[in-house]
Image 1: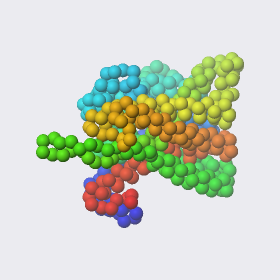
Image 2: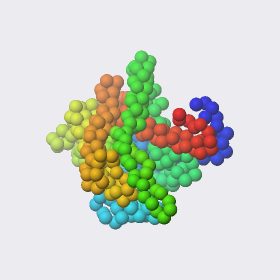
Image 3: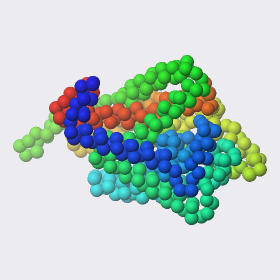
Length: 437
């Protein structure tokens, strides 16, 4: 293992790619601490200290921005607008036939879809930055009073416009940096930036647990975290391999086909997307209730009910809805991203078949049968992993953030495994043993 790591830095091309990636990551983290124009940085830091661990409604976006959201920095929106735009464009393939046609056109069509994703990212950046500034002006960004109501120093319209432009430009810059890493660095750029944002919060979360509950609870959390990481790695690597055989065919004087392969169906084919969907959907009632509350502190009954049951994750009703939404969204997303009929048609076109299954419609039905049953444990696994931080919220304490669970651990493990595999393949191309054996 250590010899393989040493070979990485002895290989000029690989060393240059890793150095470039680390440099972009350092710039990305630097931008997370640069405040946007007309933001009182001292007041923001005081509000963060007074409301540690109680961000609640904005915790998911703050997670993907590495804490930059609640600091109102130039990179406050982080990579979240791009993630949202990518998911929307992917889902629109089902609704808009033109998008599905572009997807099947190959590299040219993919480039067009990528361009649409960029435009939508900028539009979402404008929308989200305007919402964030409005919430900060109203004093609802932090559940406090006094100094937390005066985070923005200039109430003029031009100040708001400049802040929106700055935060939107920060989103565009992050998107460009991610694409640079993909082209010139190592790994997927967008995924690595998300990985960096989430990892940056781990030390603070663990330290807050140690400060709040003591060294014994801290050690238990570390041990539980190691077990959870091992379990996530095991499930993320698990897959159901469906054997496929290709018949031999003659093209001129050459023989093609006749080989055996398999279709890998992962236990968790949906990744972290269902967790993001479920979290975003559960945030909507709380967001509506927040803007519906009157200035004198009184609120309608439905607002009080939402604030009681659907705002904090420590209520059983919230946990149950969260779990059921994740299971439902997992089936929905897998049905969109994996089309058994398309896979069966492609196999039939190139002379492939599953042993014991006729080509065509029987193959599609068999793939759908396997996919439905493999998705069930995958959806339950996602739901349980997502509930870990909420359960820890009850057991460990309300003022601590449990890092080993939810979207954070899924992204860190997934991106880490993918990046290590890419480094390993690059080493093997240069006739080395590689990192993985």
